[in-house]
Image 1 (cartoon, rainbow, N blue to C red):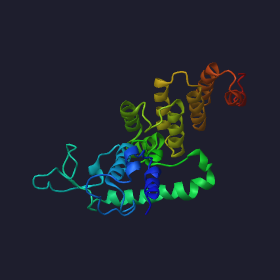
Image 2: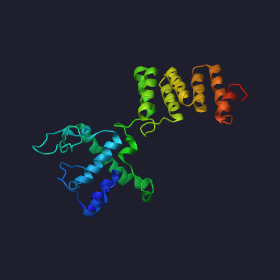
Image 3: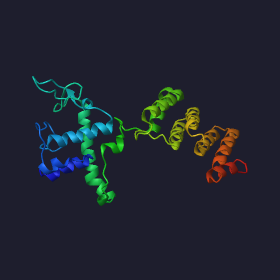
Image 4: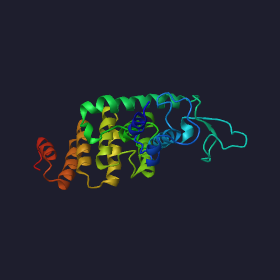
Length: 260
């Protein structure tokens, strides 16, 4: 297998291969063992660079996929001296490693087979682990997480989860904390016949976006579904005050017999 082909595997994983390795076409150290998806002759430094992109994209450490090994007599631990337990990188003892291999195949297929036909290949478009994971071990959306919390334990649990996630991840790419995110979550919860919990999420959104016409408009839609016209008009008037030219709000008020 040519060195250019080896570089292509690094490229699909989003790895910037050091210039020295490009020049030499190989890296130092013992060659990796038990490579099943990556080229079997890929230099250790390139394999390590790709693995590092995995840990960053999923917010994990090496032991997430690799089992513990033993420390060689008089030598450095297989874990590479990162402060954790020694690891046996060639062993297949964890199911997460099998999943990672399948994900590698999926990403390679997307970049090689599907993106070139759907986008402009010259633009350099490609999918990496980070495209879906955004620093989370399992890809998730805020909407899905909150809907699951409501279904499992109710509105209070979802609100507590939102506050916790916002504290941990605000400013990162993991979850969307923009104005419309809780409104979307509320709509999903309402579709599951949990209207009071949906309204609780919208009230929570007003703590962070007190001038959100979208939130008041969504509130109006939900309370109308429950037959509370007065509450709907009140919410729509608040939305209209924030966005006087919002055509949807104006139409809703007119249907309710109110001159916007």
